[in-house]
Amino acid sequence: MKKYQFILLFLSFFSFADFDQLGKKGNFLKAPIKNDLVVVQEKWLDRKFLSEWNIGVSPFLSDFYYMNSYSLDLSYRFFFNDNLSFHLKYSYFLNPLNKEGEKELFSLGRVPLEIKYSPKNYYVLGMDFYPFYGKSVLFNYLLYFDLYFSLGIGKIEIFQLNRSTFLFSGAFGMVFWWNKKFNTRLELEGLNYKYQIPDPSLWDVNEEFSYQLRLSVGILI
Image (tube, rainbow, N blue to C red):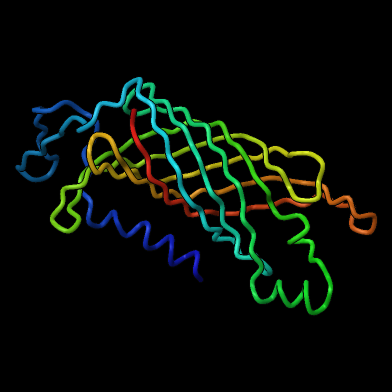
């Protein structure tokens, strides 16, 4: 239930947002039904050939039974233009036990597979596409934002395994511009990867689908 509350909160922002479509300042388009005029503005911030650094934290929305996992993130982006950027991202996982995990590990003396083969860290190379932008008002403060989608590929390291495995990443999010230098990103990311369990009695390939809600702050240079 918690994951759906996060997603609904994330999507509810759109009901307060004023979207602008791609175009040049000063162009006027006649609405198809009413006799109104729609102003299509150019983007507030030109990011062509600029770089962005972000640091953030990402709690898992997946239903781990024994852990409350989250990651610490560092990412770099290079903007080819206002609508396309390349990113390199590194995440390190922290996997503290919840009450069920403490009971299983310390009271019963067993180490569940979820703990033994929990994710350790990963890196991703990917591309971001920014199809929409707009502005909204937050506490009487005019806030500009971009909506973006991302796809990436990388490698993830699993505890108690001697090798990394391929990882596929897909995400959508919003970047909020406080000024022309600093921003905040809110991103929902899905991860997909497979790994082989080497225990003789459990020799099998396990496939994971997990979700993270990432909150990060960034600087444009």
